Length: 461
Image 1: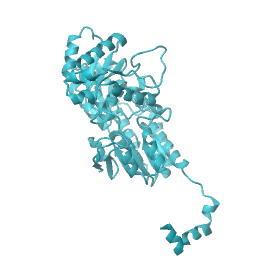
Image 2: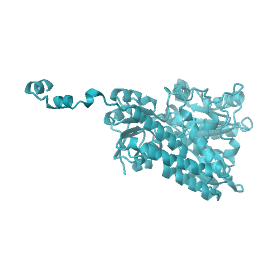
Image 3: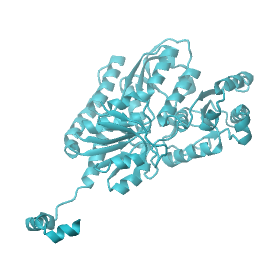
Image 4: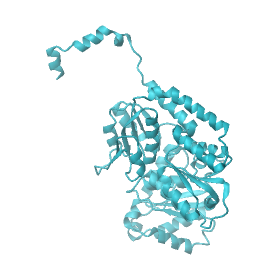
């Protein structure tokens, strides 16, 4: 069991985490016809927008209530109502997902009460558009918590309380924020291979997969349908991926009485086996031949790749669920996680990370503890630490802005684990230094080893 070390300083040096509002907006972007709305100043929205655009290289429909000095003092309810009505009139969204920021949270406004009055007063004008609110102050939590809060808000605000008849072929999938577009596509393909229908919330694979529409669309296009969120009660089972999604799965069980199973990770042979076994039990169908073949390919990749991982020291800096996913993978391959840094210490999954210690901190802390590692694993903001330490950097997570195609890399299931093994093993192989004649010369080695004359030692000291 890992020992979690708390934050020990008040300043952040090269921040590791992204904010809660960004995480909530990320989840809203996985819903079709949605516009995420930041309730705060323009600067809060601009920062998140830059990160999204640099990572996905796509147009992101992010809006703001643009709180000014007067609204900050007097209250932002009027700005919130004006922003909602403007979005309804101009973009006609199916969902407006509101994320609060530190500016309004610090003031202590009654957002839920304000929104309830707005929806009651403007019920006729807002017909056909759902409006949900996630309280996501920047000063608390991180992108993982913001994502979960948005999913909980959508289930609580949209899913019908009265459970309709169950569809024995329909399952709900609640993915964590750390899953890529390719990960979600792999999960959907696996579920459908058993003859099941997957309702994924949120589904960023439909909205942020890099397609180009034939016309300008002011909202998200693709992703989970609002109608599907409303009818989640029809699902026979819910599969939540990541400890961070436990709250969302519990909310769905509370609202629509849908039972759930939680998977800490889907990366690795045992984790993928558990997921496939669960699908076989839900569907009552045997495992398809195509999936069994992928498992056989992963088994071969494990044999081919484990020589390159054994004894390697790995440093990982990521959000709690992502840290657990990556650390269990490397530990399972025979490597040792000697440096583990995360963003918040609230998640119970941190104690299960296969490392002696998990430090809650930033990339400055990470650089201090990762000096002896053979590989650094984190997002693009870790490139300075890797350069300073002279250690290879394997980019994962959000944001990745100095490499293309990050959203199309798969890390889950048999196929994703196989590809991850090859990717990392190739990084290790690229760092190997072939022996040279000088290095193999035993006389040179002996002379260097025995050159301990007193004057040489004195100069060295």
